[in-house]
Every structure is written in structure tokens, then in C-alpha cells.
Image 1 (cartoon, helix red, strand yellow):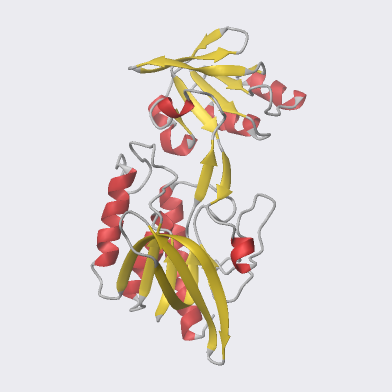
Image 2 (cartoon, one colour):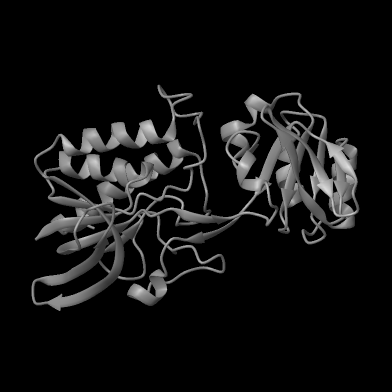
Length: 306
């Protein structure tokens, strides 16, 4: 019997786990080893760890967590979560399918903390993945500084491209937004972008151009190539698991898990932290901070204070 099962070992899950084992809670952390930032070589903006490789950050966090006797870690993909009502309170049975040589695992806990983050779906361009994480990124706050004053592209198919472009113009005044014929930019948005010197290209795209040194341009379906040395892409994000189906959790229009200020979900005993909660994808340090905050709420819930 565990006090808490944490699903996900990213910054939110690791931070929550560290704080909970320091509160002498027995914690099992389950992780599928599929981090959203696996293509990213360096992470920025994390105090005392600016420029750290995301894999190194996860490794260090796991080592710190596992240094406590109350900590357990298992690599597995969660297959089911069942809630059991007991006279003493709710219990949760979590089943996980083992990966990378780990066996299957079934465990029971008094609470569950979801910290699985998000999955990314990128625009379907043949060479997108080849340059994603090096020349192309998704987080302007994380990687904007390294692209300062460069000729950049913003590629996406969503309706929030104008806002993202205005934010990105803080780092470069040579920016073109590529909608791939799908993304929505209103006339008033285009006027605001034009006032900042930001171009808009609505024609369909063919691919990302580049060589061994990195991205060199964006090719359009009509054969035009527009020179760009890098840029940003707007993914479509979805939660890693269908928590509404698994637990009946309330989710919002973006399929993110609805929580209160303490990280409590619509199901008693289930908490959530990090990117799988509104507003979605955030910097690593923000997710870690949320993990620590929700860990305090979980501990108080277990005591019976919250």
C-alpha cells in the first residue's frame, strides 16, 4: 500500500515525488519514458540548471527521489486506474504494463497524482522531425534567446499564431508566419503583425529545407523557397492518457485536466500537476514548481486537513 502513486517522471512528477518522500510518504512513481522534450538537446530558464540537457535533468531528479527509502520507481505504461470505495476512504488500483525489461505492475494507493504531461502532434512536413529540437523549437521562452536576431519562421495550423508571433518578435525582427493554408490569422491580427514587421505566408507548405548545418529555409507547395535559418513550430498538444475514460475526470475543451488551485481534480483523491493541466505546455521550471505545490496539497489531504 502506497500513500501516493505518481504517474509521470517529468519535472512536475519528480518535484512532487521529492517533496512527498521528504514528508515521509510512501511513493511509487510510474513512468513510460516518453518525455515530450525528448528531441530537445538543451533546456533553458531553469534556475541553476540553465542549458542542462533534459535527459540529464530527469536523471538527476530521479536519483534525488530514489535516495529516500520511501521512494519506489517503476518503468511502465499505465493501462488502467480503478477507484475502490472503502470505509476508511477511497483507494486506487493502478495497473501498468512494463517496458524496457520491467515487468507488469499492479499497485494500490490512497491517492494518485497525474503528472504525465502532453503528447505533441507537429505539422506533417517530411523533414520536420529532422530539425525539431535543433533548428526548430516549440517553446519561445525556452529557446527564443538562442535565436536572437536570426531570420525565423513560425509554422503552425492553429488559431493562436498571431499571439505567438508577437511574443516571438521580442527576439527577432525578421519573422514570417507560415499557416500551411490551415492556420487562422484574422485581418485585424495581420494588421497587428504588419505593424511589428512580421510577414504572413498562407500558401501550403511542402517541407523544411536544410543540410547538415541545420535548417536553411521553408519550401512551399508551388516550389518557392523562403530562406529561414530556424524558427518555432506550434504543435497540437493532447494528454498522454484519456483520464476522462480512465477515472471520469472533468476535462476542458483542450482535453486538459480541470483542477482547483490545489491541484485537486473532480475525483476525490486524484490530483494533477504540470502540462496536463491548464494552461498546458509550460517551461520545465513552472512544471516543477507546480509539482511541489500540489505535493503539499496531497500531503494535507492524506492528513485530513484539505
